[in-house]
Amino acid sequence: MKLFVEPMDATVVDVSPDGRVRYESKDNEEWTTPTLQERRAIIYAAENEIAALKELMEILESLKSEV
Image (cartoon, rainbow, N blue to C red; front, side, top):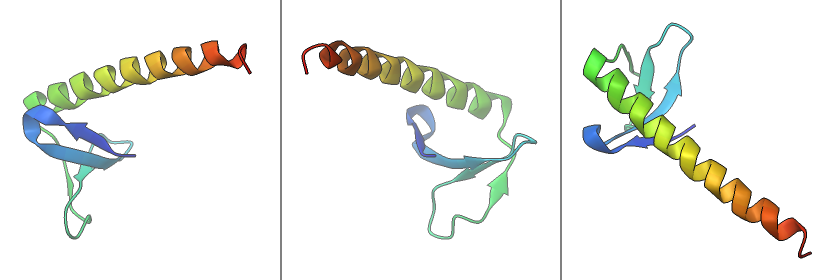
């Protein structure tokens, strides 16, 4: 998974079941617990990405009938 979080200028690459996240970096090994503000930014970015992906799916699915 890769999710760019614009307000943080960071990319989330993994999340653990306990809510810790790993950001894209040189070593990609450090897990951190995001602050409330960071969690909100991540959720906002994820919601926007879901909406964009749904729109993409709708467009591509509408083209199925043309093939």
